[in-house]
Length: 400
Image (cartoon, rainbow, N blue to C red; front, side, top):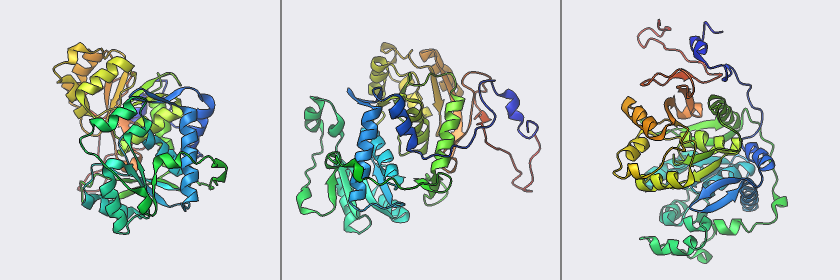
């Protein structure tokens, strides 16, 4: 096997060559962590703390609410939210109800949104009040049947939840009473009868958990069918690669958007599985990110080159302590060597480059965080991953 996979000779002893395929549902990782770490903080959001028990409880409430409003197994639900507690709750809530999550970029134009929702055959959309005009347009066009509206302030602590509307330039008023099949996320959280929830039988190997849309670089975006086993297997690979961490003890900076498959796996599912605290930021602002790192001391920081560059170039960088960061896995684009070197010098942690694609859930390669490192490369294939280079001209396996 090693002759067919020469990179295995480079593996540190702590990383297994092969991993067993997980035969369970994606939402089971939340159930497991809520049982192991019920009172541990799962999400930190501008001072609001939610435990693993809180997340599980709210996800089950949402699942029951969706089923009571007609959601069937296999129905597609668009989650059009930035990184906030409702995103995590919606994701697992849809899965508990037997639905398929369609991660949707909140910055989509109406045309892009219409294309994706039609293509995915979405029946329900969960989104922000600020994006209600786009959502109601989709309902008017009979693309979606139901809308769930939430606000960032719904999960902010007092007094930020009171002050939040006053700080927003755009005010949105929605009269829910006059429109059918429009609900507030807050109303779904009043669903106390979670015993009404019927957990459908899921086949992890074949049942789709997420329709993940590609970036559209080679034409129209395509909905990649990712099963429960696909995503969970890649989450297990991530855990195996990041072996020098302690379950239940790390803090992960959740700044990579969860509507991007990299953030979905390497931040959200990974953190939930290992009982880590996610420090969520809805958007990347360099100064705000520096302040959050200095105050909340995240230890793991998955990101993209543009994020690391934005922090390094900020004029107030030297005023903030980034030394809590132990390791960072960079994705989405090539990582310039000088950015890697400078960021490691500033933080004292490790920054390595990886590679992936939506069809692979998404990570296939990465440099070793603790071990041999080759700056300017995407590193080695992950455990249980096959890789080869073929000649474009002949279609034959290329020579080394």
